[in-house]
Image (cartoon, rainbow, N blue to C red; front, top):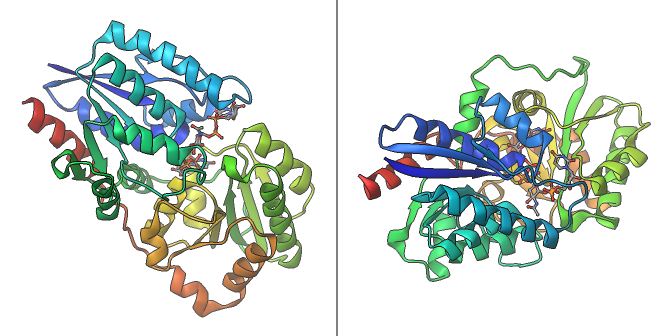
Length: 365
Ligand code: UD1
Ligand code: UDP
């Protein structure tokens, strides 16, 4: 039996790691250990409950409004203790959060091979997104198995000098999770009038905190006031830098509903019901195209260029007027809308987890 430790810290890591954990649990050669750093608390628990996965180890690391240095330092110390005690044969982590960077480094110090799920995403700008670009570049240097979601992410790794034999293009496991979930009966759990076009919003990027995020909120307010036939639904991220500004600016606008983060299945239901999505989320940029819903991305650049190149996702940054103009165009111009509302899935086919597990199986068995 090989001991495989799967790490989850935040909501999106749990969503994208769940299919890998479930696939590994089917293998008779693998003993799966699920380590939750709980860099997120409630939002991690929401997802773990949904996929019915209980962590074997839970570091309960989250503190309110945590800062990056303290979070990283605490993670390194706690992860090292776990690695020493557990002695896994391989550790997997997903994405580009502080949890992932800290785990890659902790594994390196203990000489435990590290597998990176969703490897090779790059903007080539260390400050955008912040700190995620640095996290994934640094984790990538310490990785034994790179599970790249697309050919272009593989190309990024090759450009950094990673050996081709260490990279496998697997597809993104976000699509595995989406397909598992979208086939179930889904309910948003929030009343949306049948005659309203739903505009779904999420936002949480650190590089948007402050003025850019205020601009985003003002753009949403203006769109809601100009278009009484739309309903904006905005599940607000609990980070106080986001939560407090969103509630202060948008809390009393008639056709804007601010709610707690939705559970994963209700959020998929909301995406399916949406006319348009406005978001700075990485995962949403991957899921929405597969559901045929246009996304305006509240960022200047993206490490997920495939859907932008296909014309179904558009970067609008955090400029108030640009957000208003681009959203209004999709609300008014049917042809412009139709050209973006095409179901395409450049990020995966639902078999990402199988391919990841196959690589490990080939290595160990
Ligand atoms: C983190 C990741 C980001 C990822 C995002 C997904 C880092 C540095 N950032 O950003 O890459 O895209 O998660 O959502 O790794 N909080 C709660 N409850 C929760 C979760 C968060 O109250 O369940 C609040 C806490 O006050 C916490 C704060 O949000 O301190 C920030 O959490 P943190 O994980 O540091 O950053 P995110 O902005 O969530
Ligand atoms: N999501 C969710 N509930 C919400 C908002 C998002 O379950 O209220 C899911 C969404 O489907 C996607 C993931 O969370 O799979 C994205 O997480 P987030 O935007 O926090 O992080 P990112 O992908 O930007 O790292």
